[in-house]
Image: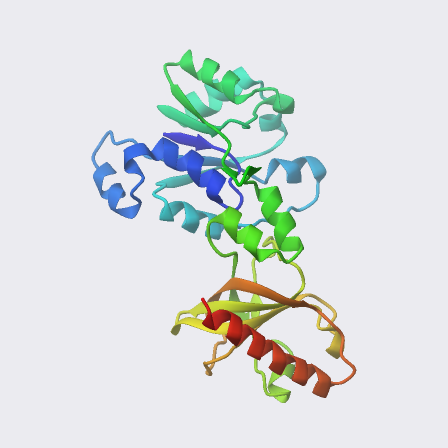
Length: 303
């Protein structure tokens, strides 16, 4: 079974397409034990690398779910494997009929195909979902076309999620995702200025292609290898008060202390508290961080 799409974010709309194709296999990890015998059919998500928009624009595209995170999200809903098709000039120029014959039939040996109703493929995106269904039928392949997923009358899309995150609208982003937006990275050494004002922070090194939400301060839940979910405060930005020269992601855990260097942390965004600001002094910055911590603790205690 092959499901086609970009699936950046693996949001509710994406999951509807994938789970419709999964059918009775949609129970996740436990179901995979039923598909280990010879001749078993495996659910395969096929996407493109790089993203077609990145290929045509020549500019790197940030992603809601970089590859490792996308694999994790797909495994959670029972997908067996992820295939990345190298999106290059040759692939971009394939006619729809050739794409089906060469990619889906000859290379992937698809037995069943699933796509969203807005799926387009082939040279200049000439092929529609209905075209795919008709061409694939000629090879005896059944194609499921899944309607768009609507929430409150609005289409769930990666673009909408990006727009919401850019404006700090976590409620909308989380509603469309079906979960909280998260950042996963390794704790690396920073300037350690937080220690000098009593708020030691963990400086996260994220995948360079990870999409960052609006710069500012957030209440968050943090998971690490040495502790379970802990409340915290996160700042994203250039730290103008201390003349920062590049964006950083720094997390302060409210109820935990210890050495985090080298650990992988996952930060789940809870609420956007305020935009990044420049303060007249470190004392003014410290006072604001104290207020941020109180606001975050109040927000998180209600969850």
